[in-house]
Image 1 (cartoon, helix red, strand yellow):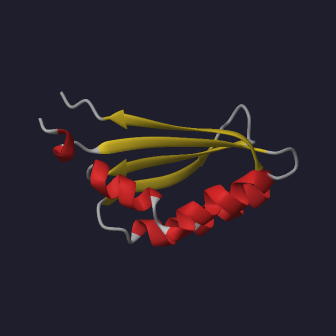
Image 2 (image 1 turned 45 degrees about the vertical axis):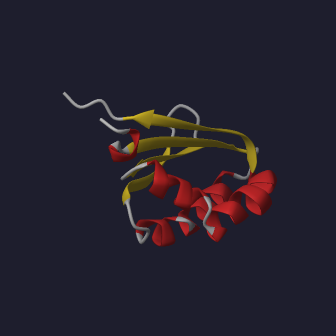
Length: 102
């Protein structure tokens, strides 16, 4: 299968600074409506970790690498990483996966 025809799964995990969990959730929720309207967005859901509520995680699925790259370049995503994240996030990790179909 060609790389461009492969769906991209992204797990984006953010650990809120102490006392900033609610602010982080609010900031991430702002990204959901515009992202859901993006072409090629299959799944974009926000989750909170059970054993450490300061971890807030997006589970995302995109049609291909091209639409994922376009998502990362949108003004609202760039603004989150450049301006919002430093004030709310202690640490974060963005990991890309390819779905394995049976």
